[in-house]
Image 1: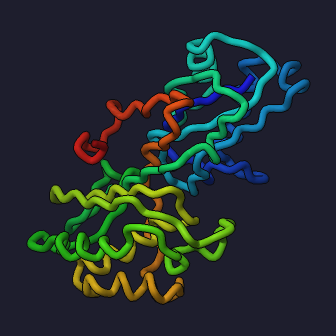
Image 2: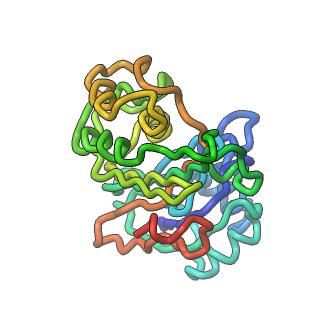
Length: 275
């Protein structure tokens, strides 16, 4: 049978989602937990391999990650949640579990992904936001030009070639992606970016945020974003920004699969950035 799970995790202790030799990854921790829960003998008959909706990078967090795996044993839905959480570290939590049809894929059935980037700014960094948000040093009497950033965001909406915001290590077959919306929420000393799209390139959101910041602090004009996009040249855009403020918050699937919405009530992020 095929099981889908909804996950939340603090990405700061991990070398990203994807299993890597001699690295501590979320995929490895989850697969070990599943193996422990169903038993080693059952896992030998059907080795556990988890497929994810989005492979988050080192130190990137998730509030609404979705995964699936195939397994040769049956358990009650709530037993999967309770059992897996027993074997998972405190930094990873299963919020829900659901039996799904074989045609469901956590990755390929998804049609929309939402990321939120949390940014703290001011004269001093906040130790309470360590590993939870990005940081920009600003004088106490200054703030970002949020209107300029919102104006810059308009050129990014729709289907485009996002080569200028693509990591050199990106494995995507095409740089062409579709962004549905970009919203920027300002509440000093916090700034939040909510970006929705069909899919994202490696480092794409962090590269976009880095470029927005250049506009927000006045180093570039709003029109510069369109120039960067049109250039299709990664060297023109801003440096990749910190991973610590990035959250994968929601994956959308066709209604036929009845995939639960993520449980966001227990997040420290303000509720208005989710709606």
